[in-house]
Amino acid sequence: MTTTVAPPAEPTTSAPATGRIQQLAYTFAGGLPRTFWTLFAGQLINRLGNMVLPMLVFYLGAKGLSDGQIGIVHGALGAGALVSHPLGGWLADKYGRRTTLIVGLVSTSAALIFVGSVSGVPMLMLAAAIFGAVSDIYRPAASALVTDVVPAPLRAKAFGLIYWAINLGFAISTTAAGFLAAHGYWLLFAVDAGAMAAFALVIIFGIKNDSRPDATTTPTVSYLKVLTDRLLLMFTALNLAAAMIYSQAYVTLPLAMRDDGLSTAKYGMVIALNGVLIIVLQPLLTPWLSKFKPMHMLAVSWLGMGTGMALTGLAETTAEYAATIAVWTLGEVAAAGFVPAMIASIAPAAARARYQGIAGWSWSAAYLFGPLLGANTYAFFGPAALWWSVLVLAVTAATGAFLLAPAMTQRAQQSEAEMQLS
Image (cartoon, rainbow, N blue to C red):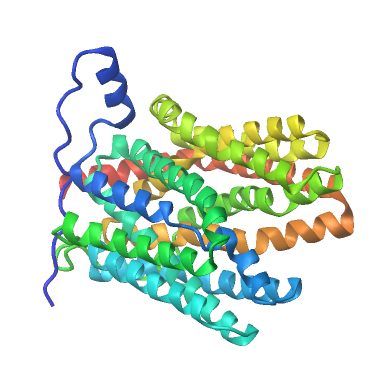
């Protein structure tokens, strides 16, 4: 079987043009290759059509499911999602980034149509599990592709820009989803599946060459080998802790606001602040944040995210809740580009996608178990116990990041030196 050698980092754009606006534009987005911008455009298109998941609870309710049954279907989706990132990582390292992106997106589009065409709890559980299992296959391939074509010093900026595109698209799609749902939920499924197919077409026509490590020059790295990398596992555990904190924004935060007598409309208003701040701050802060040591930056950002979330326990009014969201959003923005960039920096060339797959698994696990643990802690031990637990988790993650920093930095330097020699 023939393989294609992963290409070297593509030539970047020319030196920054003169003029203040051009200088700012170059700082925010300059120096990145064409392949990156193709992927950026596809991610934006995909998220602009991301309408089903935000409205899934309402869709299932409209089909006559009880709250308990809706939870079961969501659980099936979350369980399926646990395999999606690792599967995508294996496919991308074995068959190539481009191929995996296309297969993952087309499979997800088809699975989404399946979800929208079945009825009854058993079939909806099956469809949701299948959808969860394929929905994130493309993500490790996308992250590995960024690593392949973007020089190491620019990766945090590149990943930050993709995170910005995802949030921009999501902010628009969730707003539009509510209006479209009033005319029929089938519209949400049609737009969402169509956006995924459009992303696949962007990859098909925009990226002509596939990439994966050359098996003749790069030793194969199995998942068993990947899972013995203690540095990766420790970093993933820290990221899982941070993701568990973040997951409270969509379950226990609305519970707290409800208990303070605030309406769902007020929750919608304050949580929208999260998206607005990301859209405004991400391009502005990422170039500045890139000047700091990545692991130290992650420690500070995780601590800030956890502190902001823990301050929810002191909030009572809409304005106070908005203030806490502003605090943890700053932490989220600071961490966004550094997590995948750090994973990229320690991954062997032959396992870049697998490493991203393991790191991505931590998010899937957090979205499955975070709401479950958070809601039960809130219900059975009280709000104070939850918010103190969040703060302890944040301090643990931040401390772990500081302690892990020397080893992560040393591995990153070794990996970069090996890449330059190869």
